Length: 276
Length: 298
Image (cartoon, one colour):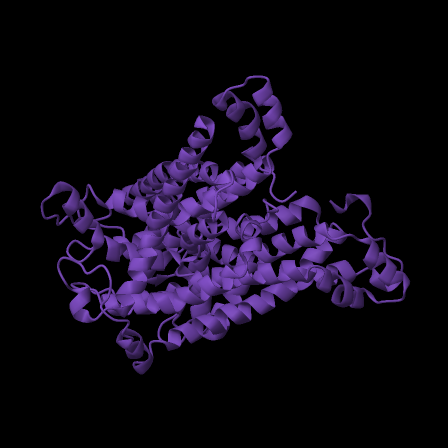
């Protein structure tokens, strides 16, 4: 009995700790979401109001009315397009690296190291070149940069996924008279469908959540939502309602999408080091 | 690895196939990776500023300036301070959390799914969120401190010199501890249970088991996690930008913020090129050394 009781107490304590941690890690997110529903009076109330009196959507309506919500669309266009391009050219490159060992370990290491350089050092010369070519504040400029930035990740991750799938089927397909491209399209891609999907999601999230590239390379036309959020910080006062509502518009889609991707999360964020 | 049986090319026309496959990627990487690097190198030997488009050869003047620029080395120091405090904290807290969730716990999946959310928030949004939290008058943090101390709190978290570091570190640790937690939880789940049982039968204590069996088993993952987070912290920008913009003064200026200010606010084009090259060289050496030691995706 006493042993059972001790176990029960231990479980209860762990439970309390788990709940306390969850509260700590979720509270800031709760606070952000809640502010976006508050009226101005509630936001600037002292002492602070811990929950809004009603779920009024004025703060969001303002963003749509003023056209600020278009920045979410811009994020979608650049993140979406660059993801599709990076996934395609990255995956075929990964296939070459995995199956033919093109370039050996050195090429693979060089590619992943490209991703680890601080963005500010990369974006500075890019900016100078973009000024030259008139690519600042254009979709093409941002898409090109995000594609390049995400390529190393795609190649690295897909190389891992392709190494995981057995080779026998590809050989059999070749014997059956498939061309190399057909093998890729009809055998390899379908076999690593889950990996493709997971990698695409994270590629998308990286571009979607980026701030520094967009800060440097956009002005007014293709401003992304992350840059827009910072526009509401004023010298004297901040527009908390807009900051919160714009942040939620950008954050909620990611929560929903990745909510369905839990299984691939660990492998995705550990650069494939943990197969999870 | 594919070492056992790379597909041998059965037809002559296939010979170039593998190079065709990597061509587009290599082209883009060179275009965005190498081409700008050469351009940086070129500009760094010139004397271009906002007011003077001086493209004559200045030799190593910009590089010499690097050594005398106290603000640059201070920003490097700030970056190292952030890294030296945040990284061990995130690792330790992540490990403790992983230990908490490694055994059976009702609703564990739900907890893990919720705890992951901070990782998915854009860092700039997380910075904005914490500036809401730390607001001296309307934020909940001063309110909670007020409850504890029993008097009204109006701490200026993003302005007071002694509070800005704790504020930024809180936001940073809040966002990335779950990252460590997730990776370490996965690593701990993969530790060989029979070894743990054997150790317990032999009468090994908790710490002995941890250092002799658990730590060596999770070390590869831990090393990757440290590498990824270490490099992320070196480029720290968004959270600081949202909370303090590097202030008060230049107290919290990181290398990335320093470079941004020099390049995009003061337009010291040539000098910033030298700074960017310095960063690229420092990091490339660090990364290639680390990659050789860390088993990433093998």
